[in-house]
Length: 264
Image (cartoon, rainbow, N blue to C red; front, side):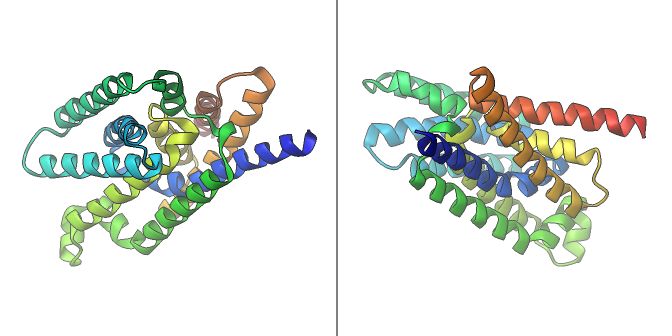
């Protein structure tokens, strides 16, 4: 019995650590480029991917990735054609979430399971889920490390990036793909409604103490991992939902670092 308990607890912690490898550095770019609503819209659209996947009996990870990628590319395309970004994001995010919930209501027996995809259930991560999460997290991390300098230059100044021969739209596409992949692997841990929080809050907390972009990315990763551990143990201790508990943990770290910064 104890061995079984240790096994599922270890899987949950490892799943959170694997996810934070992606959300830490990616969240830093989300904060720097003010893409919070972009991430929110992409994660909300993921629930449509869940409904489609369960309806057609395909992998939830594949369906979520497809819809999240389609959403992200659509928003990037429309924003580039002069549409107001916040309006486009608002319309698509809420429409995709509503369509996903309505579509799910037509699938027998799905209503009960849907809450797990909305708020996540890290304690139910299987060994196969763990492998997918780590693979996705490492792919996103490798992508960001590979494009780090170009992404950073394009984030600081589009003019500077252009003078250095860097295609700003290509770098935006890299972030779009990375965000869609992160949403796909994170949906089972924190759910569609809380993915953006795990991207933004640890990065915002790291910003209070980091002295360089690289330090902020590393700090955001470590804060995310600490949040996962605090959320899981808090969930087990007080019988609270694990996904929201993780976000509460990261929010508390943010407040503590904010107070620390003001006193120094």
